[in-house]
Every structure is written in structure tokens, then in C-alpha cells.
Amino acid sequence: MTQDEMKKAVAEAALEYVQSGWIVGIGTGSTANHFIDALAKMKSRIDGAVASSEASAERLRGHGIEVMDLNSAGPLPIYVDGADEATKYLHLTKGGGGALTREKIVAAASETFICVIDETKQVDYLGAFPLPVEVIPMARSHVARALVGMGGNPVLRENFRTDNGNVILDVHGLRIMNAVELESEIDHIAGVVSNGLFARRPADVLLVGTATGVTKLTA
Ligand code: 5RP
Image (cartoon, rainbow, N blue to C red; front, side):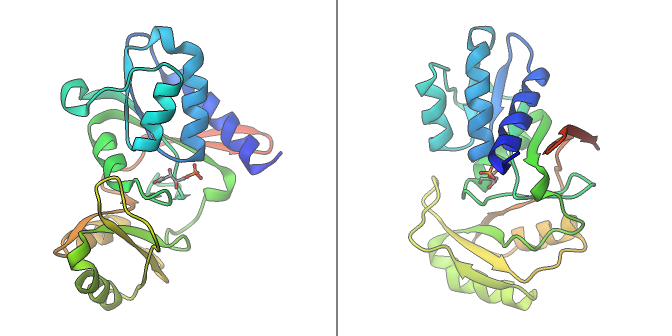
């Protein structure tokens, strides 16, 4: 089974958590795209969706699913999204697609966060995947110096702006032993909008697509 087949299988498994009449929070990335495609099959039974990126909003609209504003739709019963890394504590690194801030907002506004990954994303410690940090452009150098002070090696994501008009620093070289603490510490640097650690609000359910089927971990 290819990695993409595992992503598709796990995304389809998440459909089981969606109930009729709900407005569904939707993540960003290739696994979230598989979920959007699966959700289209039951679109007449849901009331709409809130997207964590312009790309996901466009894909949802392409399937004829109504995309709503979080301010009028929230709080939401469910949020479904992928991740770049996940631990057995359901702590995540996200933001490979650069949508981390909106993803964090929609996850925070949702009752249940279902994270859907393929088995290659499971790790003992977060940090091998460079940690994305969204930064206000004028604070780029200041934030980069602070991240170096924390032991990281921040690299500016080239030719990239987030949906919020900001830049991303991808921080290499971190072996994250306390994700909750580091998430707060990075958020407190002036100029940081948010960072890709999802530990203060981890996933509630982690579905993992493996070569032999989908497994489930809960918090
Ligand atoms: C986007 C994300 C994605 O969930 C993460 O990058 C995983 O992507 P994919 O499902 O394509 O492997 O956080 O900002």
C-alpha cells in the first residue's frame, strides 16, 4: 500500500465520526483533501463546513459544499485534519502546508479534533519534522534570533506567504521533550502569530492509516 493509499483510507475512516446536520471543521493538506472528497459523498446530510485554508475552501466549494465563516458557524462539533508528526500523547506538529494558524483556530473552536495520519507520521518525540512558526514579516529576524537562542535552526520558507499574509520560519534541529512548554514559549516571542505544535490542545482521536488497516488512539 502506498502512503497516499493509507492517507485516503484513514481519511475515509474519519467519516464515521460525522453526524447529520453538523457543520464540519476541515483541515488542510493531502490527507484533508481525501477527507473533503469523502465528505462530498454525504454532503446532502451536513449543514456545511468551515475551512482552515483558502485551498480547502476552494476544494469544498468545488464539491458543492457550503463554506461558512467560523464567526457565524462556531463552535463546531468536529474538526478533521492531518499532521506532520504525532506522538502517542496525541501531541502534533502541523503546518507543513503553512495553514497552522487557521488550523489551530478551527481546532480550538471544535469539540472533537480527529487527526488523520498515515503510519509514517508516528514518532516518539516531535522535532524531526522542522517546526513551522508563522511570523509577522517585520519580526522575522527578531524571531529567528530568539529561536536560535532556544537551540533551533530557523529557515525562512522561500517564496511563501500564509493566507494571513505572514511568513513561515521552519525550525530544524529541535528534539522536543516538553511540547506543551515549548508551544507556549515560542508563542510568547513578540512577532510570532502561532507555531505548529498542537500540544496544549492536542487531538482527541488519532486515526492512523497503516498497511494493514486503520488503528485508533484516544487521549
Ligand atoms: C497543513 C498541515 C497538514 O495537516 C500537514 O502538513 C500534513 O499534510 P499531508 O496530509 O499533506 O501529509 O498541517 O498546514
